Image (cartoon, rainbow, N blue to C red; front, top):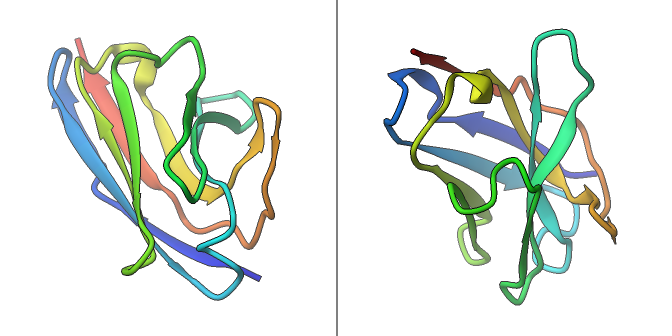
Amino acid sequence: QGQYVESGGGLVQAGGSLRLSCAASGGTFTANPMGWYRQLPGKQRELVAGIRSGGVTKYANSVRGRFTISRDNVKNIIYLQIDNLKPEDTAVYYCNGARGMGWNGQVGSWGQGTQVTVSS
């Protein structure tokens, strides 16, 4: 089962940028579609960006054009570049196998996530 450690969150002003990283171990990282999820306060965790091993990506409508997901299949790391941050992006961000948006990746253990807070 895959295990994931997220980092890179922080407090930023609206319009700013962040780059989140996720180090993966165990599981079948290379073959697994991977994704970034976020959990807004009081809401369920949702998949917002996914990437297949070959690089095909998908995004939720709410983040398309501002979020860019990428992966390094050698280092087993997934990245999420977030540009033009909005206050509504404030959430805890997690990575894991991508399950949602039509994909059925293998979901492993959930990490601690990384907090992103956007001030207006």
